[in-house]
Amino acid sequence: SNEELTDRINAVRRKQGSRLMILGHHYQQDEVIAQSDLRGDSYQLSKMAADSGDCRHIVFCGVHFMAETADILANRPEKIAARDGHRVDVILPDMAAGCSMADMAAIDQVENAWEDLGELIDTNDITPVTYINSAASLKSFVGRHGGIVCTSSNAASVLKWAFARTSRVLFFPDQHLGRNTAQTMGIPNDQMPVWNPYDLEFGGNTAEAIRNSKVILWKGHCSVHQMFKKEHVAAFRRDYPGIQILVHPECMQEVNEIADVSGSTGKIIETVRNAPAGTKWAIGTELHLVNRLKQEHPEQEIHFLSPVVCMCATMYRIDLAHLCWSLENLDAGTPVNVVRVDDETSQWSRTALERMLSVT
Ligand code: 13P
Ligand code: SF4
Image 1 (cartoon, rainbow, N blue to C red):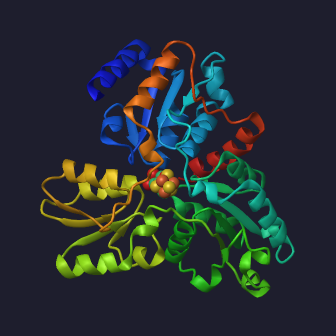
Image 2 (image 1 turned 135 degrees about the vertical axis):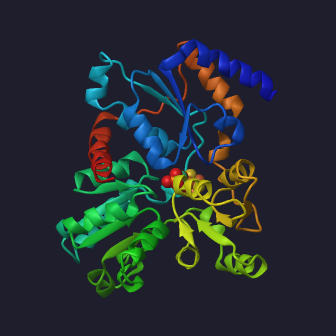
């Protein structure tokens, strides 16, 4: 039962004390969030891992790319030295908790695209930008090519940094975050061709479109956020006069541009928290977060933007049973599901992540 699992989890937490840090992303289930020492959006969680003091284990209740990022940042050489040579083991309670968007860009596809782009334009004048929702190998690619990582909360500052460096950006894997952010900077869609890695002819573009481009977007998306449609926005505005539409920037441009507010999960939470009682919201992001906001803000009227369930099936894989199993194993000195990025990948990824941390 959940009660029994909670007791067992608490027993390990008491015993491990400050050697153990449990991090939880806002999309996690309530009972998992209740067991997290700290919760946050992708940016906040990467900062927490980077700042992790003297702990020995981070159990990451989130998805694989987040655990990789935590490993890279928590195990910076100066951090290891400060811990007298001890590494932090980052543990993902279920290794099947991936991210379908992150899987839409593979390192060989990005390397091929870079090579193909080099036939048309000078790659020294392109900054590669990877959304944090990507494998460490892509962060490493970006680090090696003068590029940078972004999250949904700092994408605009990161793009500004990139445009101060070069006149073009290659943005992967989420076309929507890239397009929505560039749109706020005044870049028109006809300067944002989409690169389809499965189309061998310049990603499905003409040479002219690539030469004209400012931002080359990757053909990737979040299957959860693409479920929110502009018809849903219209229906809420019709049926609930005065309602505010609040969405995550992984939503499509046609939804994002008509919303009242767009932002990371951290910003969504803060926006609701700062609104007066009686405010009406329709929120377009993962279901567990929207349901939690409903519970935490009974003084406001909160609706889920889509009539169908949009939940992240991989985030949902982390449950109390997997959390308990991974905690008891680390407590027994036989840690399971340790996510460890190899040294070379880690070094270049860290360069790209540190650029992000210094910009935002
Ligand atoms: P944020 O945590 O940056 O809001 O991103 C949401 C998300 O989809 C994480 O995978
Ligand atoms: Fe990936 Fe979308 Fe799930 Fe976030 S919500 S982890 S982007 S699939």
